[in-house]
Image 1 (spheres, rainbow, N blue to C red):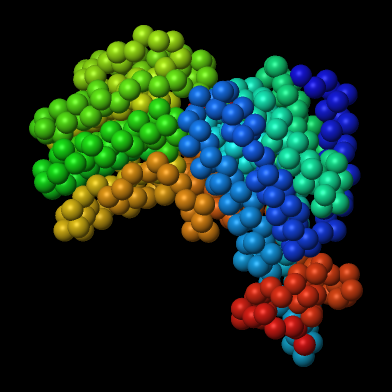
Image 2: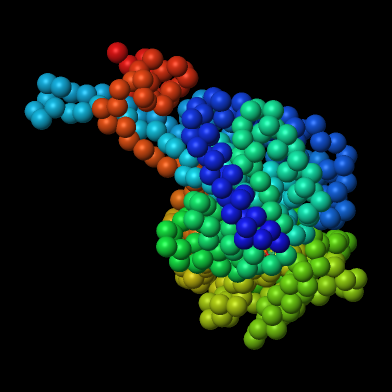
Length: 488
Ligand code: NAP
């Protein structure tokens, strides 16, 4: 682990870099992000091979994830340069009003150095060079990554590429740094450091909540944007399961086992009307055909076995399919069944089992279905499967479900998160610590940007995005009208 002295040095360098980044405008930072993306793109087999060996994720998946990572850097940079993310507002002076109204202009500045804890399940897109790092740099914040201990070689290769990009673009060394930690206490020193102003985290509930509490107890509390566990419930309506039991089972099995169930959007719970044996039989058959694969690391595989056993051993939980693999480190699909009554009475049944484990919950009537929606914890996603005609009879259910999630899906499955402006990848606690902010899509930049109003500040001293001439060519809200025109 980096010593306290090293952390002080790294935080000091980040603070110096922050003062330089503060002077950069949106376009200049977008150029920095593109230069970093070019360096990541140039990384060849060595990167993919290292990640494959460290995470056991297939090469094809990793190649796709690298593309997604590049998309994040480039699309966040483009959104920044266009002005569509950190939206600028200008209300010019009204001198003739009594009392006169001053000239007020609002933009965003970086919050300060950000510490990023990457996830084990996305070694590229949510780790060293992941969305948190890209969005913090877009906002004008230097980043200190705490490398994930499950893929340190990958983390080193990525960090080198980012450093090359930072250097090429002419920014100070402290714009990006990475530390390795063998102890949790050591990593926590980063969160406690007075020069650190925000934290981005993707991982377990225990980890995210611990860091959130530490940040809140600092003399100067700072925000922690933690994305944690989620069971992503799927609510199936009666007509749907009656009309297409085998089809729903096939599609659910595919989503549940994708990437050995190691997605934050994995649909771990499916809620169906009671009395549909054809669905459960088809589901067991589909899951039994999926070969057990190696999980990300042994800790995750051990937790999978343990958490699955905890849920399966609860009262009135029936195991429908038990993992057949005995090879250590692998995750075999498993399935259990319970009733709405049991689910409503026992919170343990809501716990996330990270891996390809599904819990089928059967309901007797709409009242029970709504009770589940009321009881369910905050989620990244909730899904409704239903026929077009019947969905309109479930408006109350939809309202209840929408209160609990950041993304609502109809007749689809939640694995697969598009990197687009309209994406909201977040959700009410305990899925995330702040449901107002997404960690996917260019809006993720807002987490690390702080609004500042400039009142009666002479044009020369205004940041470029607020200047009368609009030198960056942004769309701005000027006196209530969106325009690219200069201010007279
Ligand atoms: P994790 O154990 O929470 O670790 C994530 C990162 O945070 C790692 O760098 C870890 O350090 C660090 N960390 C965790 N707890 C900490 C603490 N108390 N103090 C300081 N640092 C701490 O997550 P993981 O290894 O990625 O996966 C474990 C579990 O996380 C899974 O079983 C799953 O439940 C959940 N998960 C959720 C998502 C999601 O998207 N929501 C994604 C992946 C995993 P080390 O490197 O030293 O371990």
